[in-house]
Length: 164
Image 1 (cartoon, rainbow, N blue to C red):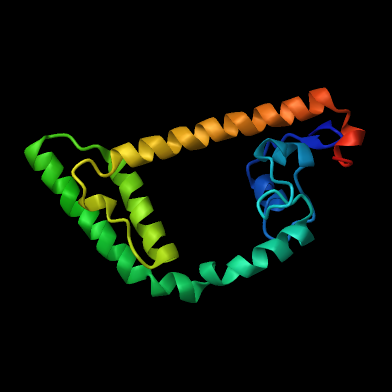
Image 2 (spheres, rainbow, N blue to C red):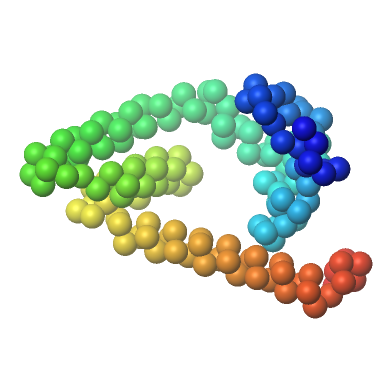
């Protein structure tokens, strides 16, 4: 059902796949991406063809071959997580799953991106301090980006923003 000229509401969940898939002719409005404050970024590209061009340099990192190349490393880290989980449950009868999964995610990502794991699963707190600080930083940054976006629109008319 169409709500506005640029908005639809989906009743049937199967319709989601018809609209949001790789190669779709539909796209989200620029207002959807405005809070990110990066109109020239890959993630915030409104036009699908522009997004494809910006995504192309990253595509090799997510190819089937590249993912299979890191499979053993990921399995090792998951085994380490399972061992740590068993130890936590045996000794403390509780486990900080949130921090353990954050540590796993960062270890896998850092190993893949930098070819060197941050090894947060090996720390006693699973680098809780790091992840809490990182999430707070991201949360604060998003707030600032939204504030700057609102301020720009309030101070300058939209037609003058392109002249700045």
